[in-house]
Image 1 (cartoon, rainbow, N blue to C red):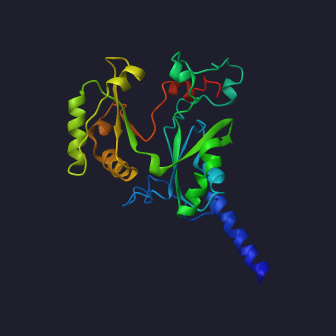
Image 2: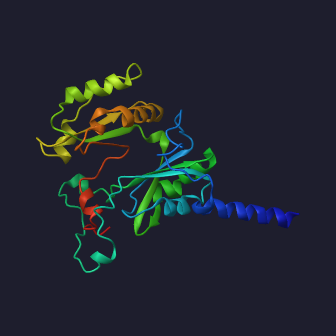
Image 3: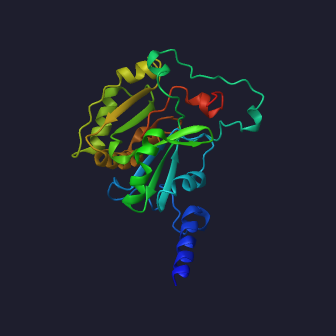
Length: 255
């Protein structure tokens, strides 16, 4: 009987590791997301993902921590990826194109990040334990790191058309989030560091907690007019897009 229980447990572990045989596979774009309440104790953010990462590979890597309910990958641009074989003979840039002292002391980070939703809090706790949170995990020569959802209290509204000024953005955000939150933005520093003065505007929206940020993300991603306008590149993200994102997407950076 003990041997039979061990075999059943092994079969269950194999199903959890292989998303193709797991009937509970889902992504945040389907019924698994958005949830009615913020899954603070079950959600983990992963950053610095390879540009050609797919949910199955991320599932196999972090499924060791516990049973996964859903996975979503953000900021993927396969239309810009020339492929691994096409760049073997191409000379790559070996450092980010930034001369600032702040950038030189930061580790390179790709624009891709992901969310991993576990079925219970135990799996998420293992995924954000010190070995993975501090030292990370190497995947395709990329040092990916995990972040607890409780620490994600910012949203990044990027590349808003220059037709909208800061006052119009504040009004639209406050209107959608009323009466729970009132938004006051300061986009001058963010645009000065990453965007031309007269180019698209990007803003950082800070929240008092992850629960407030999560609820706001669900509302804004569905109802914010800036995100639904045609021929607009405006995006809403949990992590800031690095200034060298295009070089990562096109494999010009040697990371």
